[in-house]
Image (cartoon, rainbow, N blue to C red; front, side):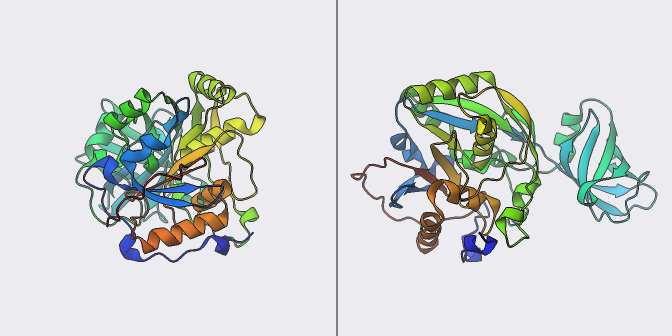
Length: 355
């Protein structure tokens, strides 16, 4: 299987540069994973696609303002830090720009000196291990000095940083948002609950590797990045009960899916677990837990479109993406959404086309 098998042509103007005014008013493409049938709705219609007894699984990670701008101590040279993984209380793995000359012992200043950093070591892919110095609580200092690390394809400045955060975000640690969840509002989630759908949470701290292109032609040779996940006991129990009762497990986003399928590698019933996962899901890989998926539209030739293709079939997915381009859907992090599942009602009326 080749990486080029997952290419599609996307006009640049369809890459969403900002979110829609109201979270749940984005468009929603509904794809039957068995037949390939497509319907066009809005995200607030998601309640109609969920069944009583289903389990909706959300990733409750919280994006930190992980981009810092500072200067090198002594020379005043400008530097950009991008925080990736917390290694200990004050030690982080970071990406530096420019970073080629940042050797162990180099020191940097941020803000008016509220935050300082020293390079400890050069590690994977040229990243640095850095120790921070500050007074007070690190998260408060970071909230004051840091910026949201928006994806590289978004060039417009985000006015409201909360729009790159899900309404249920809880655990700090992500360098990127689990964007499928950005469409939910508290009111919409309450409607989901009232329908009899149970909501469970997992945590996967999204790394910037999610945007890393696949550089090998043979998909089997791609090496996935690692991300930290937690599947709590109550969510494992919810999923097991849902499966036993014949309900569906509906995963919100590829990050939640990767968490569930990592935990499901040992088979069912699920057990609570946590750790680092580098699971790579592409066509031919079996889903042990996930029955349906809510997701955004993904980059051509990315691991994310490969995961979606594993669930719905490559031909179905590429046909759906072709339709999305023709219908002028909005793509990527601030774009529109898809619901991929089965048992889609044939009498649902097609919404009027919107731009």
